[in-house]
Image (cartoon, rainbow, N blue to C red; front, side):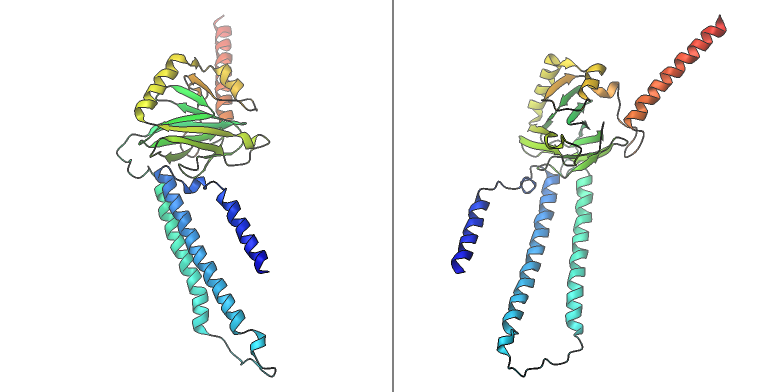
Length: 305
């Protein structure tokens, strides 16, 4: 039994040494750092609880085991202990209250501009998903990328999230938590990268058979390098036309691609923050409007004639 236990512990230790560190515990931005801190705090509290419970269990099993009592032993009649009941109920309540306060404070932090970047103008990026791709529109720079994202370091990034298909979840583990992208509203996500590097991004919400490959690459670089990249894109990339974007929206997997111009010009996102019309209705409304204008024009011409 002893050797079996030692073998099991050695095997677990050997396997764990080959595991890469969890990305959420290797933050590269202030939002992710806040969340990683909360995760470690929760793990610490849970570890203390588990150790306390198992320690009490071992003490009870050893101290009050049947072999230590005489054959004619009868346990005393006990009505209960107010102190024990208070401890058993009070400690969990205090833990829940403490974690609730920490969670609310953290939620306000990650929903606001990243800490330390309050005086800097954010870079706005529209991140939209389709089956099974990610489209990143830079309205200020007037460029668009597919399945990859370049961002400057030491500058807040304001993502506008929405979807041209089923609900997806935008997630860059080393920069911050995930947030939904939906077809009938725009969600805002504030992130920032403190250091240059390459990170993994993905859709964290199941959205069909192509979900597993619904990923994108993120590269954080200095502001100078970012500006240089933008200028290079404007010189070399092809323009994004309405027909080309319609082709990109078709279900399937694609590699990385880059364009000048954005789809926001001819197929804008839902109106307003956290609400508004969906893409389909917005697009159909435009078509109906064009149709009505054509009918009115025809009627006007007939009346004129």
